[in-house]
Amino acid sequence: MVSMTQPPSLNEMIDALIKTFNVAHAQDSDAHLAQALVYNAGRLAWRMREQGLSVDYKTSISDVVTDADRAAERFVAGVITASRPEDGILGEEGAAAHSTSGRTWVIDPVDGTYNFTSGSDYWCSALALVAGEDVILGAVHRPAMGYTWFGGHGFPTSRDGQDVAPLGDVPIEKVCLATYLHPSSLQDPAIHATWQKVASQFATVRMLGAGSVDLASVAEGTWGAWMQHSVADWDWFPGKALVEAAGGSAIKVNSGGVEWSLAGNKQVVKQMEELLRG
Image (cartoon, rainbow, N blue to C red; front, side, top):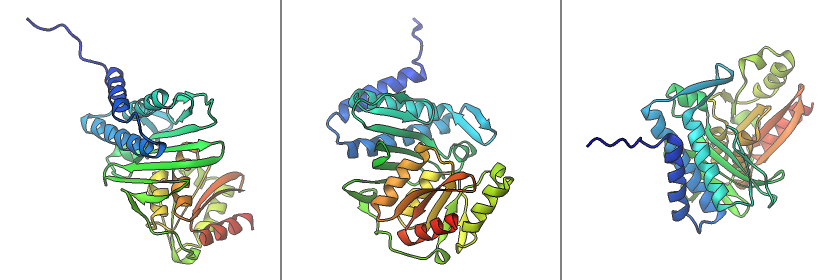
């Protein structure tokens, strides 16, 4: 007899994964939970990409969202709702919950989605725990490399459990700037001029399209600094936690009519700030 049972939907499979994960991680600390969540969210998105993606467009042809983004966010938000019901949730793809604890988990299920949909390996899953503007911890997983970065209050930044070298002062002219500027910003004279004023002082510049990977790479010393304007919380808080826990600085400065996020060693961030305020 042929079974008439319908195969489970994607949401049903994600909900089953949430239940299984919560059983296995019921006693996890915030630190362990964050790292396990970004790892599993990243692996979920990776597997879904291998099977083919459904892609939608948000604000432009380069601002995309996939069924993998939504599934990974559903997974992370579902785990947090069950395991930390008093905490709030803020997700890039719309997951939201009010906080009664004063703490909020900020989720970027796939950071660098354009790269992700294009077949590039330069993307990640990212997560931060914040209390107001205080970033308690951040975790970033880059599936293609198998790397998981983690850092926060009381936790020096590490990659795969090994502490990264603390960020020492290096001047702007000796380091690489990781950055991003949308083509529309290149056409805005004030934004373009402000960005160029700072970027031109660096030894070299890279635009790779995944802010949390950039920031994790700044925290471990691969890139020297990072700069981008109008950055959403989910693109900023995970990497901010990593850079600060590595001994660096991560601040925001208004200039050229927009708010710039800056990160790097303390010397280079001070130089960037002075250029923006000058």
